[in-house]
Amino acid sequence: AAGLKAAAAETQFALEQGKQAAASALAAEKEKSAELESQLAEAAAENKELAVRVLMLENENVRLKQMAKENFMAVAADKAHAASMKTPTGGSKKTSSIFSGIATRTAVAISPLTPDSAGSSPSAAANGGEVGEAGKGGTGDEAEIERQQAELDARKASLASARAQEDHEVLLKTIERASEIGFSGGQPVLACVTFRSLLHWHVFEMERTGLFDRIMAEMSGAVETNTDNNAQLTYWLSNTFILLHLLQRTLKTSTGGMSGGTRRPRAGVGIFDRFSSRLRSSSPAVAAKSEDATPGIPGVRQVDAKYPAFLFKQQLTAFVEKIYGFLRDNMKKEITPQLGSCIQAPRQRGGGGDGASRRGGAGAAGGGGA
Image (cartoon, rainbow, N blue to C red; front, top):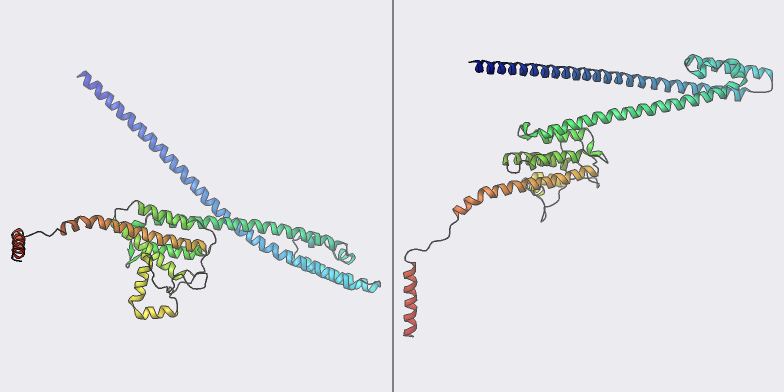
C-alpha cells in the first residue's frame, strides 16, 4: 500500500509539472503572438505614414515646380527689360529702373517664399547686378527639384514593384489551391482568373518577366503529383486548354493578325490545333466568317504581345500535349486488360479433324484414279 501511494504521488507530481510546463509554453506563445501583432500594427502604421509622406512629397514637388517656373519667368522679364531699356540718357535709365522694379515686385508677389525673389530688390534689378545671382539661384533650385523628382520617381517605382509582386504572389497561391476552385457555369474559373489578371497587369506586353515561368512551374508541379488521378488531369487539361484558347484569340502576331489565324490543319499538328480546326470546320457559317476576319473575344482588347507571351503560349501548348498523354496512358492501362479478355483466338469445331481426313482421303482417291 505504501508503494502504491508513493507511485500515485509521483504520478501526481509529474502531472503537475506537465501542467506547469504546458501553461508556461502557452504563456510564451501568447507573448510571442502579442509581440507579432504589435509588430504588425507598427508596420501598418509605418506604411500609412510612408504613404502620407509620399503624398506630401508629391504636393511639394508640384509646388516647387510652379515656383521655379514663376521665378524663371521673372528673371527672364528682368533681363529683357534691362537689355531693351538700357541707354546713355538718364531718362531712359530711370524708365528701365522703373520697369525692372515693377517686374521684380511682381515676381516677389507671385512667389514670396523663393530665395531668388527674397534677395532681389528694385534697385538691384535696375543696376543689373543681382539678376545673374538670381539666375544662379534658379539653377540651384532646378537641380534640387530634379533630384527630388528623381527620388520621388524611384520611390514610386519601388512601391509599384512591391504592389505588383504582392499581386503576383496572390495569383500563384490561387493556382496552388486550384483544386478548391473548380468550375462556374461550366467554365474553369482558374483559367479565366489567370487570363484576366495577366491582361490587367499588361504582362503580355512586357519585354522581360518571370511570372510566366512561375505559373508554369506551379501548374507542372500540380500535374506531376497527380499523374494517376484522371479527375485532376482532366481538370488541369480543361484549365490549360481554355487559357490557351483565350491567348490564341487575344495575342497579336508580329504581322498584325492574331495568333489564332485560320491555318488549315496539317500532318503532325498537336491536339490543340486539331481540336480548334474541328471546331471551326464543324460550323460552315463560323468557318466562312473566320476567313474574312480573325475572331476575337467580345469586350477584350487585342494585345501586341512580346516574346515572353508567345513563349508562354508555346509552353501551354506542350503542356496540353503532356496532360493528354498522361490521360491516354491511364486509359490504356484501364482498358487493355478488358480488351484482352474480350479478344479470343478462334476455336476449331470437334469434327474439324475428320473433315480434313475425309478431304485428304478424297484427294488421294482422285489421284489414284488418275
